[in-house]
Length: 305
Length: 270
Image (cartoon, rainbow over all chains, first blue to last red; front, top):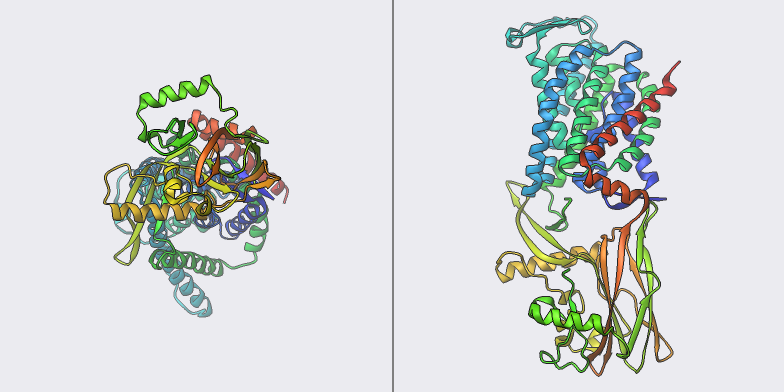
């Protein structure tokens, strides 16, 4: 059964879209990330114009993260103060990101930039996560191994504007989460991602937040960054397909519920290892697409793409 | 409007009928005006050809997956019929990738000033059999005779390569088609053909042109408009997204928030 998407201006099978939403929702349920980094490339793959895919993914992300935050909030796993500080940086970053996106669209290099950013981001993160999770998995098998020190002082702790984040049990410079938020805001606008898969490792390894409050807090700021990106994209580029986003959300809800149930059965290290594998697979696929000789060297740029 | 107008072209080409299609830029604006006025004063009648569509509106709704419209008509003498369907002209940019440091990058682009967003031809017999190549080229019949020109001066070799790529891509997308369906004669005088449109049909005002061909020449022609438009919810969503982009964005966000909240409801109590 096909549904006509008014902004994307294509008819797509509604079952495919629901399935896609469910698959991405499942992953976000298992891993606690938004899933935008998978959704955007998949939407492009099934025929949604890249610019519409990026903007509509951001829209879908708003709904998905609201659902996620509410679930984590009920378990008391959201650090609101940290979330808002991250958000300050995130909003500024997404304004810059949408501006860059518009510029790239005019230059005709938006698709390439999206792909290159994905490969670099996913590739480096995937490798880092892979190394970390493999180490963690190996440590588990050596019971006598020494534990790492819980808290190490680095240059980051010398920054001014120190603030106390009670829920995260941290006393660090506010500049740190602002900076992380900013970088993720930029990528969020260019790539149509919430940045969960960058945010989560950054919160754990750079800020040193307790793992339990990380997904909820990350999702909290993603709501606002994604909402900002959606409005900005709608305003500047007219590329937000609300119908597409809604259909994806419906599928996503089902997927997320199944996913979160599945996720609780896996150990943290195993989860991170699987996520690393997934991230690397997407990066490899995109890298292959960029370097392999295209079937057609020519492409048509319509007003929307 | 940038459609080719039906103009008097007797002096320019050996045409017996006063009705011939001439690309707009070949005729002077004044000539076009005079002819246009003359046409409105005396509608195309008893020129050997009458044709109409079963519908003059293609409505794109939520369930739209492409559609077809039947064109039917009659001639008052023997001959062949050629039907062209032309969508509104658009500026189109074609980009070519080349390898830079191992990565394929868009390195060259050519913009064509006015390319029909949709073009299809149907005829009772292959055009090559009923018209000389020169006549077909003059009337712009067939994809190869559309010949869009680059908006900025471009070397001929490059323009040709990009034009060829444009035609090929549009054909693959189902937006350009030669011999898209056949014009069937029912008896000697009545004819009909089915014009099909894919789901990605561009919106706008189309022009359906019907030509009567006899003795390797076009002896008569008629033009009928056809509107392709989004209707209902989709049309409103689209219009709203361009008219009030900020409000549209805000509503899109609010809808997603509500959907997300609703989605989290079943989790309560578990």
